[in-house]
Length: 488
Ligand code: NAD
Image (cartoon, rainbow, N blue to C red; front, side):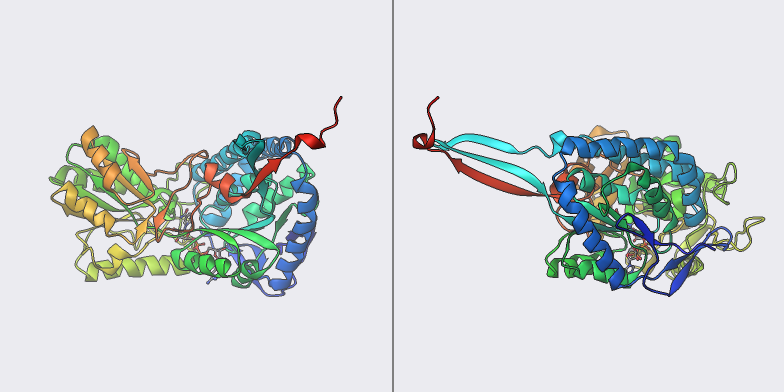
């Protein structure tokens, strides 16, 4: 079985740590690779190489830097099928979900190709007589990304293309649960012939994260993962003088108003709850109906029962397993807890099995109704295929519930009234809002805009925020005296 390596200074090298963990196929438990736990000396080697690479890269004109990204786009497109299959194998999602995440990754590469304009500065002539002032953007230096397991290909691309186009060198730390996808992508990126050290990859877990947060060469950290770790990364990184953006967990509410189109709403809500087996930071989790709810409840329950669960590379499969046996146990315990708290089980997915994949971490789509809003199930990010259904009487009550949520990644409303939608958009306290949309995932030119405990920092991933994050502004005030000029 392959032991995954680090990519440092343009070479594949062994980690200094001997300890490894297994990467398992969540649908079968088949071991796919061994990943080193990593240690601080791996990070030091990567940081030093990245600093060497940075010296050349920062003075490569931006118009030349983006030529590498144009090539990267083509390489990713040419290898889309192969990369998507690797994502399915190690993360458990379906082939279509894997492809979709890579399409979003490619969109970010395309968007970063606009960097010659995106990172332009500003100029004011004669701010005082004979004095001009201007602002230029320069790269930060060596930056790093610490990624979660659930989008092994896409999430690094919320940052990496912008970091490179702005002139930074970049170190990737994939999740130890799904490290194969970025390893494959970095292997493909060797075809780009980037200057040595400009892109590095360090495998590992906690010790590697700590070393990235402490290393003096590293100037910027982009983190995506659970809120507890996001908060830790944000404060530790900041205390070591780094610029940090840390995207955290979520518990996303969806409000269905009585005037919503039932068929469309049902389809979108089911896709939003059960896509990627609920392991999305934008997964709809608590579905709140306002007013009469019998028709929508029946429609949701009937549709849930038709959802096909299985191995993501098999045809017609709509939902895969969850990432690990631990995760499956945790989700089943949360469902049990919700029942003890008074919830009613409308669809029970705890015992289901997939023929031919009896060892897989499968939980079938589950629906639980009337859970208490102050209970554990309602308050916890489930990160599994569980729809919690709650009924309320008024839109104000539903919005107040959203605003009491500690998380603020996404909130959605389904309605046919523009006025209700406008009120919702204005009052709901979440950074990404969906109006008749289930997963309000911003496209590449917009920031991925989490709020509250879903985000620690100022500048989000993607779009113009990424340009701001990966550059520092330098303001120049300039005077030239007439007496110094030679006459021609
Ligand atoms: P995680 O927090 O367990 O791990 C994320 C990264 O942090 C990994 O690279 C891991 O190696 C590292 N890590 C884990 N524990 C650590 C610790 N104690 N100290 C230092 N480093 C540590 O997250 P996960 O389980 O891989 O991913 C799921 C979570 O990510 C969910 O909460 C989900 O909502 C969140 N997520 C958020 C977004 C977003 O945009 N807000 C996107 C995707 C996933």
